[in-house]
Each structure stands twice: as structure tokens, then as C-alpha cells.
Amino acid sequence: MSGFASLVRRELRRAWAAGGLTLPVAFFLLVAILFPFAIGPEPKLLARVGGGVIWAAALLAALLPVERLVMPDLESGMLDQLAVRGWADASVAAAKTLGHWLGFAPTLLVATVIAAALLNLSLDQARAALLALLIGTPGLAALGVATAALTAGLRGAGAVAGLVMLPFAVPLLIFGAGAMTGDASAMKLLGAVSLVLVAGCPLVAGAAMRMGRG
Image (cartoon, rainbow, N blue to C red; front, side):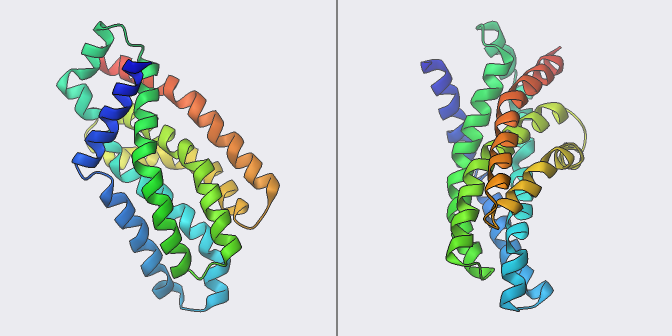
């Protein structure tokens, strides 16, 4: 367990040291700032579409650091060293997922408070947005690591990652936006989808990393 925690700390430390988490959050806030200029400052309209905007921005922000999640370790031989030491690829992927989430989600939740104010969301909507993102961001993190593993080593990996990740993220977007309207069933479905991604994506990422080493 201490070895797993060390991997998680390594991922978290590397993310912050490289400034890799600043850009996604800045992008998230930039979307929230610019969106009212695109559709107009009508408060009711902003409140009605604000939930969808927050989730779309969160998804795109989560996509930005994909290239640094797996590719550097594949190129440096770190994945080979972990395999020689007896680490299962799925366990490494799980550690990367947890490290990515711990570094990404808390800052994104803080940014959501600012975005909710910019989009004129009510207090209840803002609370629902925070809860929905708290439930859904683990799924986004897991999907990001799996996508990074699948596209590692490919030329133009960032663009390919978008094509791979976005279709699988659609359920999170649908149920996440629905949960922000106070729909309890949407919140439950969001949790179920996020749980499936957290459970399944490390297996997919592990298999992809194993193939990449081969």
C-alpha cells in the first residue's frame, strides 16, 4: 500500500511541478467568462444553460493534460521499471487515476464556485454543480488516464485523444447536466457511470500500457 501511495504522490507532485493543472483550470474559467458574451447576459438564459456549460468546460479542461499522463513514463522507461519490480499495469493506471483526480478535482471545484457566479446560477444550482462534479470527476480522471494510455506514442496524440475520449464521456455530460437541475435519478446515474469508469478504465489503461511497452 505504501508503494501505491508513493506512486500517487509522484503523479500529484509531477502534475503540480509541471504546472500541468493550471492550464485546465484557466481554460475552465475562460469558458465560463466568455460564454455570457456569446449568448448574451440574460440571467434566466444563463441559469438555464449554465449546468451544461460547466460540464462541457470540465470535460474539455480534463482533456488538456492527457499527453503528460502516460507518454512521458512510456518514453523514459518508467513503466518498464515498474513492471520489472512486479507492479501490475492496472495498479499503475489506478495510481495515475487517483493522482490525476487529487490534483485536478479540488482546484476545479473551487473554480466551479467562480463559474457558477459568472453564469448566474442559484445557490441550489451551485451546490448541485459541486456535488455532481465531485461525483463525476473521478470518472473523468479515469477516462483521461485510459485515453492517455491508448494514445501514448501516437503522433498528434492530443487530437486523437479528443476523438477517443469525447464519445465515452457523453453519459457523464448528460447525467451531470441533468443532476444540476435537481433530478435525483440523474445524480444516481451519474454516480453509476462514474463508478463503472473508475472500475473499468484502469484495466483498459493497463492493457494499453502493456501493449505500448511491447
